[in-house]
Image (cartoon, rainbow, N blue to C red; front, side, top):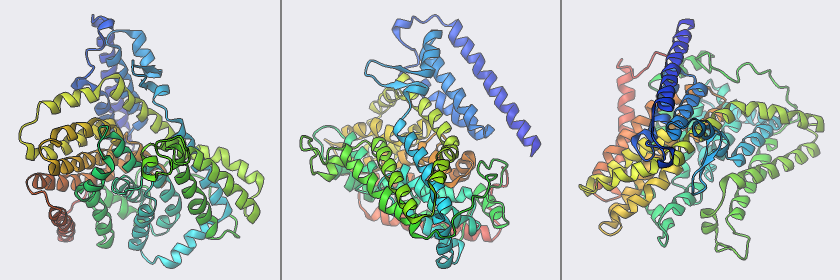
Length: 556
């Protein structure tokens, strides 16, 4: 263990040394005029900083330092020889369109506030006895590890309105249950993540549906196109199938199997990175009941967030274009603002409810404020770093312009384009950690490629774009949803990433094959065949594993 840790530290130092040399070479040896802009803008180099950050995180397991190195390299590329711009771009800079980046420019304060409030709410639910009571109720109704996994997945389906909300809420509710059934934290994080973005991207009423609709060209019925694309969204559909099948047949592979085997023996974390394992056991109120968890979350938090989502979209504003138009309001909503307001209202109502129930005292609720913030510090830190590098890549280095230049040169072989669009979306979303950013880059291009020639193939192309974007969101170390899934499961972030990637790649590979088929055979039957093949593949892998062909990674 110590040798591996020392080895990782050495690799980290070597990587940092290389980046420092690059910084010196580019910042002090180039002679490019500043007024001409960065030579790296709109080129492949725009994607190099996040790629390096991801590679370092996977190799060294030090996600904080890896992301910082990526940000540093991105700042050097943006400055391109100007030391002042290099330094400023790490903090807060913006372009002519007002798009900002850096640690300050990339912040989404609404989401950060939502994280903190949910951490506080979680602490209150814990001391009130609501979480304990729910765990006891679940244990009396759930009789196996299989049942605990299915229940976690089902709860993810219920909370389809937003992926951030999904990740943190499901983790908060199910963590104690999965712990008691000796399901590893890495497996819980996978279940949470797999039922967040994949569910939201096929839910007609969700912040994701609204985002996809808004990225379509003006004058296009984006919502109708989104509805049509659901049936061909192979990655999302196959991921959901995979979650259900592996739970039913008790199958795990890759590094996940090691985590699950260790969990059965009492070690829920496997590695030394266990950020929440040493917290003191909180004494909960024995008077707590199941409703003390259900009411704050499902009667306060969920409705409040939904109401504020449509409120920010103009649903209640007579002067708005979307007055009393639910779908239109969802499309114009501000998710971060709505989640911030909704969570605050829910927290206030929850405190009043708990005080009336006398399951907590006022002093205890005040003690939960710093504790809740403390619980979310790891997730907030990674999230701020990830936002900074994503914003630098998108706005400071012009990654969308680079992608558009590639696609415009590849108009031949129309029937292969859906599969190629999926690969491109996978690469962009994995490199930048943003699915919504990938939508913004790719959807107008996909629409333009097919709108006048093959509208039916355009639907499949849109599905391919959405599938690829969700893949990156699902498994990139710098994806906000991946980070929040780790936070919801209270799992080491890199443990979550390394155990989930083989599962995501399996689904992505199957999806790519069926996008190739769908490019020539535009029929929903392709989706049915693909679903059957996904089940058959997993069952076959399980049988091979039982016969000694081990799909197991014993490292880590």
